[in-house]
Structures are given as structure tokens and as C-alpha cells.
Image (cartoon, rainbow, N blue to C red):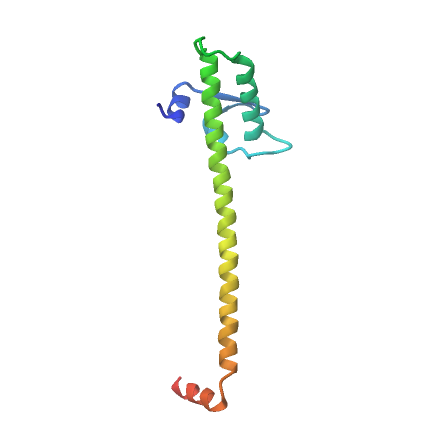
Length: 131
């Protein structure tokens, strides 16, 4: 199977949007969803609807070039959407990990302070003398 991005660039594939025609590279700059501007979800839904309308299901008829192009567009859109979703999830997971690490470091500092506070006067003097 050919690389879908190789096929897209060789055929100069373009995607209809509210901003006009977009290249495959332009898709990476679009948000997943948006109320006001072009977005990946709306473009993917549009391509999927076109594909559904054009395919009159048949297991015998040969697939037309238009269907092949629409299938390629849909595969590219689904790939880019999945990558962007994974990037968002990774960013959220990283934030959760960073927050947990900061909390644990804070707790560790608090516990260390508590252990120092529980030292006797003689133990504190001994540690000061060692410094």
C-alpha cells in the first residue's frame, strides 16, 4: 500500500473548506473543532458524506476515481485527527504527571520538616555542629 501522504502530494490533493481549497499540509494547522472557522471535523464529515452519496454500494462494480480520491481524503483526515487527539491526550497526561510530581515533592518537603521538628535539642545541636 502506498503512503497516503505520498499519494496526496503526487496528485496535488485539495480539500474544500470554508476558507477555500486547502492542501494536505494546511490540514495540520486546523483545529479539531471550531464554531467559527474551518476545522478537521467539519471537513471529514463533508468528505464522508460525499463518499456515502457517491458510492451506491456494490460489490461488483469497479470503484470510480472520485471514490478513490474521497477515500484517500478521508484516510488522511482520520490520520491527522488521530495524531492531534493523541497529542492533546499526551499533553494532558504530562500535565497530570507534573501536578502529581509537584504535590509529592511538596509532601516530601513537609515530611522532612516534620522529622526535623521532632528532633530533640541535643540532636539539633549535634547536626548544627556537623554543618
